[in-house]
Length: 445
Image (cartoon, rainbow, N blue to C red; front, side):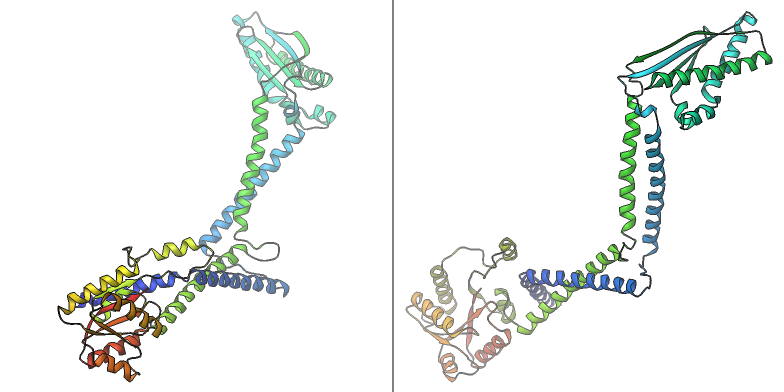
């Protein structure tokens, strides 16, 4: 018995939930209104604080504060790196060279020595090679050209051939005169370095083999230049990403925290939805209407003779959602005409009453009187050997009491969302007080 009570209770709850889902438009409207109200109040609070001169404090959790700080530090680091790269692209000569029209100024220097089987020449070449790569002072030429030393140094390539003790120098530029000027500056600095080496170790010969300036197709730096440009786009994207995430935790120019407003709007939507559900539940409980055909069977322990489905009135917008809700626990599932259902009811009554009985039956229930009479007439057409008497308002109408009292048995008629369970309780109580058997129930959905 306890298990049956629990099952009935769960069924009742499931029916309530399904009925509540039909009001999804109302619930959605309340959620949107409460979200706008909560977000608007939060915005107004920030604006009032700003107008009064008081700083608007955004209350963040420790985790949110840490995330905000990480994003701000990341944005600042990327911003500095981006500024450096943009400055480089603006001032660099190498980046702006045309691969199909590049001026190359070349020179070769040979170091020779008859001592120590060439070991001295190798040492001198390595010293001059290292000097050309790492130690040239570009200060004078940089001031003269109104640029920085690093932009001149990257135009120069210095390499060495250990077999022949030859140092090769290449200068890239878009201007022939400037390329030659840079090459002459390097050669001058290397001659000064050679004189220092002559004084320190001596015993070697320093000779300029050749010097040539021409225009060539040079694609050796094309990929390198493209990578530098792509780095700018990557850094810009990273800066935008960091800044956007950091701004979620910080007030905007008006002193309003977007994340705080969104959070309050979310709270408002959830709170409004719960409030709407509570209101709907209270309304359904207060009306105490029959919501499912099974309630008639579970509440009074009587068989269900038939269920007549009626199409629920639908809205024109998003009607597919209403159809989906209707399919949840849909009842009944068999496809029968009304005539076939009345024929089925008549046969069930004959089986319940037995042969020779059930000649006078009363039809009672808390439904409109027109529906009661129409159902009695339709049932009488299928049971021509019996008299079906409608008994409306059994608790207040003496004629209805007389009809039940003179009948052999009673059939209950109920309408989903029309019959009040409290009135049905009184009807069933009145029938049992008159000591009449209830054959079963008919529900119009």
